[in-house]
Length: 124
Length: 108
Image (cartoon, rainbow over all chains, first blue to last red; front, top):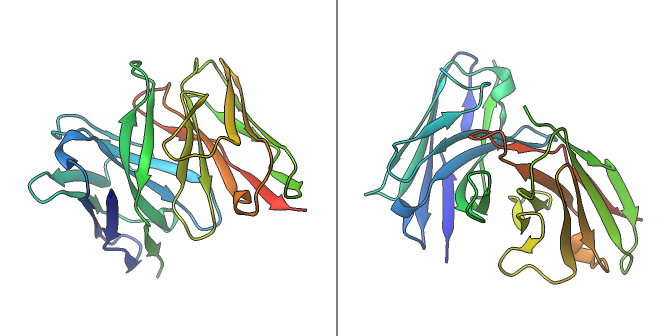
């Protein structure tokens, strides 16, 4: 059974840092690209960052570029998100999500498994 | 940047009725669109990918259609567990993913 379990969320002051983790099990972690997606309270979904299976390709949303760093450790089946210079607008539930390809097109990518999320609150 | 606009924002229906949810893209995404269901306090669940393919384990009452800029998620006969928020998603402005703002399907 595929499982993704996030941890590391909490309350942090503006300008502070936090590191999120996502522990994966039930599949060959090193074969999949992984992503972070967030959801502000009462709001919709926002993609944050993506990392390829071997960490060769990394992408960020403009809203977090330069402040957040995604990484992974395939030996530990773990995904990470280092968040620096946090702002109030970063307050959200952060989900890790496994990326899968639909058809052969470069546009055909989706999230087939999600963790339960970890809440990050940025407030003084 | 491709923007996805979902309508209506809220849909009020009764169990057993047919639900039709819309997602419109600001430019063509071909057939590369997905639908997710999210219940309160839960993570999203993939329902449909590539516009019309049901994900593993998704009941046949869920179907997707459309291409280009206009897409539809249809739930043929609503079950009580189907009342949730639904999101569409695309990655045609690769490598970024974008989601629609969601449609809340509520019990009438």
